[in-house]
Image 1 (cartoon, helix red, strand yellow):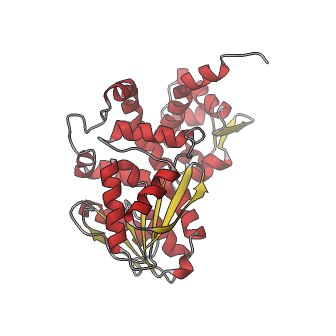
Image 2: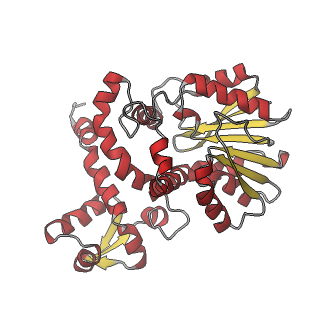
Length: 334
């Protein structure tokens, strides 16, 4: 078999395709096409595209599989229409918006990060990585929306496959907009939920929950999991939370979860959990590098790592279950 450089070149220049998609999301191209499929001239005018760039930009998105073109008219693909139209509840572009505005420039300093072990975002100089985000309402709203977008598939899977018939209450720790607890409550009318996060999150959370008609069963509790006890509930959930922190904090959070749960209660931890051989879940490994860029001590981890920490905290019957894509959850019983 001939050895070629194709894989090297495709990966090395992958940022071309990535930025084309991110720019299309930024310009709300897919939202526009969901309402009005159009030809080159129409889209050039409606989106403000320069004549030199418009055709190559749109046709590149066709070649990449994000748009269809027939008889000169551009339309969304089924996937783009479902997930990248801002008017739909299935929209996941919030994560891509944040990737465009924040992560894309920060990842330009990956070489510095892997040589220094230091974050390369707003936290440069030793600042709390979340302080700058939470201090700016617009950036906070974008960040919280991004968390919903990247998590929705896993959230809906947890709502479907976890044995909720055995439990009546849950608390989502680090809830962001509250998509996880909302998906659970939507799927199980007997479950009441709590979203726990810093007080600044409350208006965004309450607006999101109200939009889903869940204000009578889902409520917000403000606090810090560093300074405060966790809410008491039958099930405590940590979605994309543990990977933000160093090992000491991971263990602290699991200890607090154990203390807050009743006997027989459950903790659910989910992230892009890395396979135990650390050779298959590339997304999880790259997410760990993202934590290097974004946080002072955060890192992603294997299923065996997480089960070990949960067992140390006192949990029993610990197991790891795949959710969707690169996401898995670790479950432990109090």
